[in-house]
View 1 (cartoon, rainbow, N blue to C red):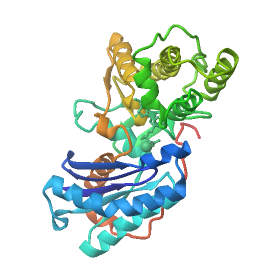
View 2 (cartoon, rainbow, N blue to C red):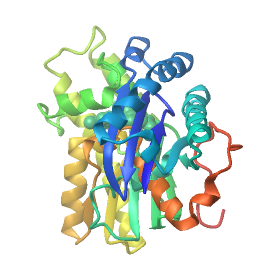
View 3 (cartoon, rainbow, N blue to C red):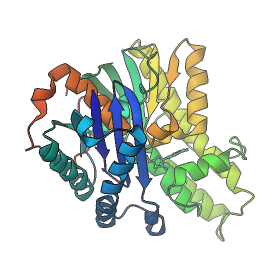
View 4 (cartoon, rainbow, N blue to C red):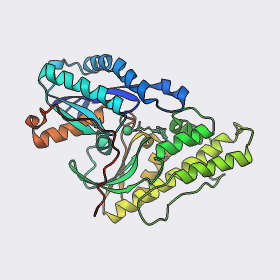
Length: 341
Ligand code: KG4
Ligand code: ZN
């Protein structure tokens, strides 16, 4: 089945065409102009989606060598995210649905990320433990199938990506800070500074990253009140990165052991982190667990992951179930699916 998919929940406009689990095109336009504000400005984000979406759709068709009349269904992110941005994607999708008489599958962005690690990784079977680490979310899921998963752990405050971004800002690095810290850390000594591994031994699968941010802030103000010298930055970056990654890896592997999952999938923007990818793979392999991570283009927000999971829903429920246009967008974050709640 050929599916045209849209993602516009935050600061990436993306259009993809997916066919039988294969990605025919995945065009992503990142709104880098938010850098100068130190974070995403919602109103500007929705306007930029509006300006980009039409042209990106044309490019997605060109790259896939297909025409709109070849498409059999549309998929679009409807939650969670910035309301104005979600409205741009969903209304564009609704317009095309009317014009070409196509069904639309509304997709939860989080579900897109959860299954994104399976794109080009068909060897990963169910059940698997998913560590979803992005700018907005940090969670561990136990995933039973394409339509059944439950939350095992959540962050109690900042998301891992948010921690990377806020700490990078403190260190005077550009936004988004995750990739900047990743790059600098490759030149640094991760053992030089001992930052807290919050909740690493808490016995549950929840996370907390706000203490780390405060600890780095106090450390910087105390030791480098005039600004962090550039020669120290790589060691701080490596030490911060190690503190975040240690907790993510320890909890994810423990969750896999407890739930007897032989596979781990890491996904979301932070799954692009080179140290997280390497450490998870090595530590999990020591106890016979396989680790899967999305290709780089499917780590950050992208429409390919939206089309990929939409196809599974279409196969399960049939095209006829998706001709309703009265669905709404929602800013809501994860609804709890923890056991016994
Ligand atoms: O999934 P994503 O593109 O958007 C959200 O849904 O939030 O994730 C963006 C986050 C940002 O916080 C960014 O700093 C982080 O992913 N990120 C990284 C790396 N690349 C992106 N964090 C650590 N290391 C990286 N290499
Ligand atoms: Zn995301």
